[in-house]
Amino acid sequence: MQYDEMEDAYVQTSSGRLHCKRHRAGGKKIVFLHGFGASTMSFERLVGELPDGLDVCLIDLLGHGMSDAPHIEYSVALHAKLVKEFIEEEGLQESYLFGHSYGGWIAASIAQGGFKGSGLILEDAAGLKEIYEPIIKKHGVEKYKESLIKEALIYNPREYVLRSTADSVHEDSLLTAESLSAIVKPTLIIWGSEDNMIDVKYAEIWGDHIKGSALEIVQGAGHVAHYTHANEVKDLLLKFIGYGT
Image (cartoon, rainbow, N blue to C red; front, top):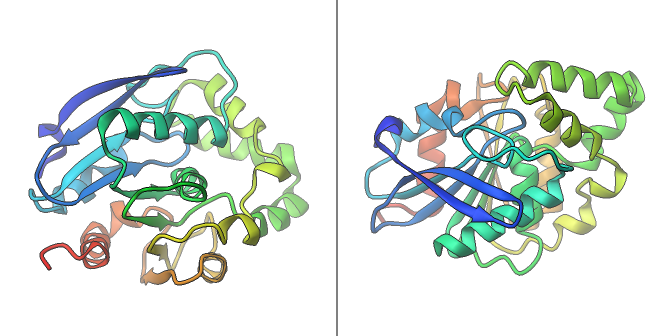
């Protein structure tokens, strides 16, 4: 399938319209959530590797891409709530949920309670308590937030969205062993061996917290393996969902 040929669609949620790119087919369904400051376009290369038989939905999170960007408080909890509303409205409850980085944080939050999806794919996921504690201790909260916002502004010019999102990160919002133990659906964890944003050493901690999960390291990949190593991520994804079997 080709990203540019996917259908543009919009779903009204309680906080604004979410834009998505859809490829509708009769096969297994996958919903993709992008990272902080990014958009559906970040999955362009991966989509180009996927077979036409998959039913694919790429969501622009609120405040990102072509979705609405109201002046409200943004948080993981808000994004999770709106994505769940979107999935319900579109009849995608039994889809696999793929989340990259911040999108992985949102996906993991959704999967903790009453998740009807077929499975979970987390790529270089953010949000783990063990990740943030040493970073904040070393750099300080404000310096770390500013570095994240500065980089994200390259892709998303809405500074108020990025700043509100960064400000919402606090200890109570982080993922822990206890919260992740509630994930019972099949889970695949994908990580770039050369990730310089979230070190690959944390991949095993994710695996330890989500019982029965599978871990795959993409050699030579950085934080965005689905872009730099799209073919390898495609192979891992199709194997995990049992496509063609």
